[in-house]
Image (cartoon, rainbow over the protein chains, first blue to last red):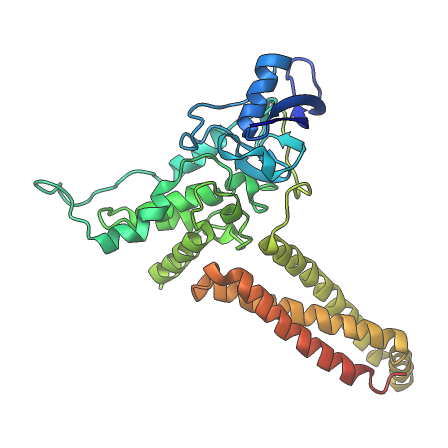
Length: 235
Length: 124
């Protein structure tokens, strides 16, 4: 590991004193193998203790540290800075209100998630031992269960930016995950919820969500399957 | 809390999918504009034969021939990318959307070149 000098521009916003967000530049020296989160920690611990950002697991599983770095949504903890060269431009996720610095208000995001009923809905009685699910049935939803709810997809979606009512890729992916779950009986309810102008039909297959997903989930593909299911269901 | 509602986040990186979407919207708007213009021009028929013929002679100028070549490109882009969107959404094409874009736009380009040749053959 060698030390390198980098310039980091961070969009700062302090609700108590700032009317609108402003850029602040930090010139710091970090290890060349650092991640974006290491850089933020370095700034927070050594240069400016007032910098606010979310982080928790630092191993890309909690989904706390999604932010926009050099124009793309990434998880700060898993993204090495050598991807960006010597200049970093770090912003909070687009499409959300900023609470402070890089911390955005994710309440609407989780509220939309609740709207599609993200839990198993059962009509039938519980089986004696366990639900039997074939490998093929699991395969169908396997990848979509990997979502860590970091909101990188919804914040990358041009359909979401101007329209806060749009459910967004994360909630719709969760709808897919339950609609196509062989154990679940709530498909009809969920399909009715997503069959809306601010539901699945607001997805214009722009694919930004798929490019942004740190778990490489094929979100747009699943949303297309969900659209087909909605059409099939209403025939 | 600071509210950042944006019509479009211009600082976000544009991937192939987003370019396709932006150009699809812009070409759609251009086509709406053209269609209104077209109807307005055809409206000159109601002012009699002479007016109509004068307008048609005016529209046969090289400048309008060039604009027609542009219009042909806009139509082809909108049609071929529209086909791509249908394939992506309803014919399981989403995983190949970038290849589809390149292939369909290449096909559109060939048709554009061919059509432009035919349009401009007698113009100058």
